[in-house]
Amino acid sequence: MAEVLTPDICVIGGGPAGIALATKAARSAVPVILIEKSRMGGANLAYGSIPSKALIAAAGHYEVLRHGPAFGVTGAPLQVNFGKVSEHIRSVADAVAPHVSSERLAALGVRVIAAPARFLDRRTVIAGEFTINARRFVLATGAVPAVPEIPGLAGIDYMTAESAFDITRKPSHLLVLGANAHALEIAQAYTRLGVDTTVIDGAPALPDDDPELAEVVLERLRAEGIRVRDRVALSGIARRRGGIRVTIAEGEGEAEVQVDGSHLLVAAGRSPNVADLGLDAAGVAFDRDGVVVDRHLRTTNRRVYAIGDVVAGPSAVNRGDYQAGRVLRAVLFRLPARDRSTDVPVVTFTDPGLARVGLGAADALKRDSKVRILRFPFIENDRAQAERMPSGFIKVVTSRRGRLLGAAIVGHDAGEQIALWSFAIANRLGIESMLSFVPPYPARAEISRRVAETFYGPGLTPGWYRRIIEFLRKFG
View (tube, rainbow, N blue to C red):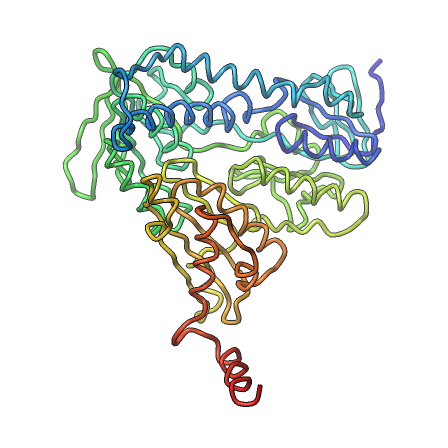
């Protein structure tokens, strides 16, 4: 007979979002169970952010050495050993794995069940030999690589994100199907390691980002030799001797063009992982974008919440962690778990990087045509010049009175620089807050202060601000 468990919270999915919620609950002395049928850490550890950033780090080291002569530093001819690169990626994942292990969670007070989970009804989950009747369930099953329906694709061997980091021999020509952020990160990394690379997508490259900033990234990728063929019609994929052939048309009425490669990586996004969970039996609605939730992250079953990549939105570990905190707040204190995911920064780890938080300029202008758009270029930053990385700029959106609405950065270390703006927007600060801190010198942090200064100036200073100054000039 199955053992019946009655925890306060049952989390389904041992990826970053599920682990975050289970850990936070355990630290609050709340009985919590986490169910994971596969490897703890989920896609993030197996084929997501951890291995991709390890690959990017390897490519970054090669790129720094390659540009050594510009700084007066030279050395022996550079070589890339793909077997060693693969070992580096695996070693990084192995080093991170103990942080998200079942043993560590158990030590924190989380009971981990290694088995597939399936809803029996709206109140009950079956996992292995256990029946769980929890007060609240949280779906955190993440997403899996999406495979588009393209004629011929099913008949060839191709890689997905799950196998993209297992390459131990140099491909002669890598075809990347997809021009989203993750696809371009991998394409640039392999290009920097000496692989001829072509990116193909029917949609625009970096479709979720501000086109003005995205173009800076795309210009660099093209300059490094990556052929980015976006907005094309893909008519078929076929085997050819020694590799793969992709047939595309680059415009309506244009003749078809054949692109040949040795390897194909399908990186066309991700699909929510909802198979075999019994969501129909649980009364939990879902669609192609993921589990349907309200603004409080509650599903159509009031006992069930959903967080992370199984919910529609940007695929990001920090988003899942943020949502875990919001849901736990709702479960423990009966307070609204209103999801403000726009407060969560999203980063593309290309070089130059691309980061954003809050409202973008286009969305802000739709709400209020009188918002202020501020810009400041990296080329005027002394640290950027010293490191010969002056490409990029920051773009900040404020209300007429200076309330921060959003920020986006394209340039080296964009992901690190966006943290300051994330803090300011999450705490509902104004542009004047960026004038109140003293950055180190020389540092890229100066860019944040300098862009804030552009809110004021001839013809730009708000009328109320000018009137105070004028009054004090006369009577102060």
